[in-house]
Length: 251
Length: 347
Picture 1 (cartoon, each protein chain N blue to C red):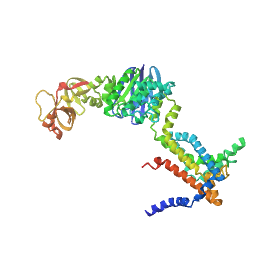
Picture 2: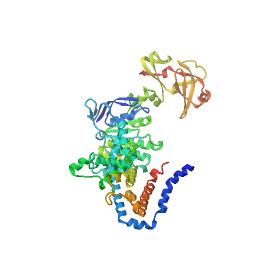
Picture 3: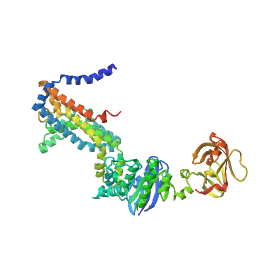
Picture 4: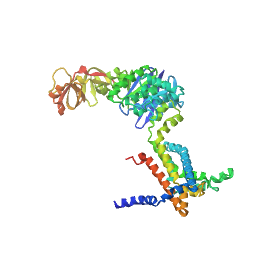
């Protein structure tokens, strides 16, 4: 019991500290500050772009995963879930080595088109997608595996082409799984720090997302850092409350 | 219009081996115990299971393992109705019925679908979602969804077995009416003999992946060729070797039967022809064995008693006889069957 209480306190105390020590009178002005607004806007843009990218790339990947079996499946699964366990900063380094100016693919891009990805908003989106997409893939794959495939067979027997079956039967049936996967993915992307700061750097208005702004501001302007932290906490609680039936309600 | 199918399909545990031809306008019921391969056969004909062999519909080859031809499900024009309706849960009743029509490029899909629902008396439910329907309504909508695409071959997989007994009769009547209006080939899979007899012109009995018997319901039940069919018809089925005036069973017991012929035969004894006595009966019956009452079951006003012994049989007696012979107590009895009550036909 005591250990459990200590465990709970470990979760609870920092949250309490954040709420109690928050400069509540400063919330209004801090929110109005241009650097805060720019970080918030950029975070929203990057996390939504990353979620969109994860939807476009992750759903086909989840379908591929659900249709393979054996060694290939284990291999693909390990590959897609690796970013979930990989330290984000390592992910950032890896992205830099692949897409940096002297990277595996980046050097070709630079030579051919003069394109540089690192330290741009695109890099921030890529870093967030890299870290957050597995959450979507896992959710959609699980949905796909628990799907009753007779719906698809019924649709085929009614004369529907593969594309019609996918767009009018499979996708709508997967909607709950896709939705919860996308929310999870978005929340992860919003909080992304390690891979983003490594691959995209800290350029206010370009790559300085809220988590990075929090880290930087903690030195110079702690009040602003706390307010931004409160915003991220509020978003997390909102996600948790919004998805409670799916995550907390299940016995 | 007709279906010709000569196919084998490998499934875990058994091989399906079927040679079947069905004329248009004919309803064939595939009857068999669970795991006999009935559903596999339907799925094979629908193109959902890979097969070896040859399947053609109205002269068009759908499967041919020699030429490698395989027409995918969506281009076969087959209608598949499942045991539980499998209506798309995210679409309204109207959109479910219109689904196949839209897939076929019908511009007026909603109007045509409405027409089907209206004729079936379901127009007032067309904006409902599938989960709001009763089981019977959902299965009727599923049938309309399939019929609306005007398939050439209608495959029904136990269409009534998921329904409550009370609505089953109602849906069966509607199914019977719809089948009569449908001009294509009709194939019904069931394990319910009543369903088969009520809806089908011809029965095909499938066991362990192979056809063991086929014919009209009367022919099949009159001369069962398997335990499954004998149970359906409610008769005792024996198998043995005929020697003129008697049949020798595998355990050596001789069963007297006039004009039994020669060779491998089936012998059928109706439970009503099996008489039970406490003392050894005298006189005409030539088949007399010792037996033991194992199990008693009420069938309407008669009681069916399962007797073990050299010839395991089911006897049908009156409730009064059960009391007199104390049959429910695992009683030892004498069993007798008149030779003329044993019906023998070649195996």
